[in-house]
Amino acid sequence: MNIILIPKIGIIGAAFSTLFCYMIAAAMPTIELYKKLRISIDTSTISKITVASAVMGLIVSKIELEPVMDMAATCLIGAGVYIIILLGLKTFSKKEIEYAKEFAGGRYKKSLKPPQ
Image 1: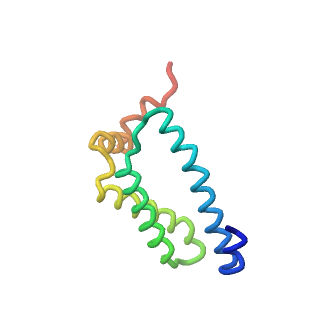
Image 2: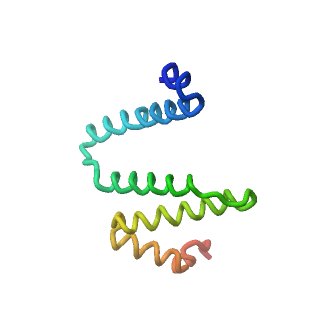
Image 3: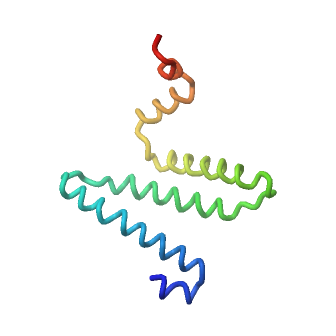
């Protein structure tokens, strides 16, 4: 792929080629593992996560802030957008949302303390 993409679109071609190869390298053993373990793939959740990632990536790519705060602000905005989209697509179960609320509320701080 590099032989084809780099001459046509330069460094971006190298990035796309690498991304594509890593996706294939991750997908092949995953598919084999699911076949051997006879586990079904939840394509609905995977699709929702993919859509949320793509939308978040598009939004973050359009953000232009001052250089000093650029990285931190972009990360925070990206994380917020990603979570909002996942919540909007109803990716999380009620149990997962309750667990996240309890964890954020500090109810699990006791379990983080060392035993006495």
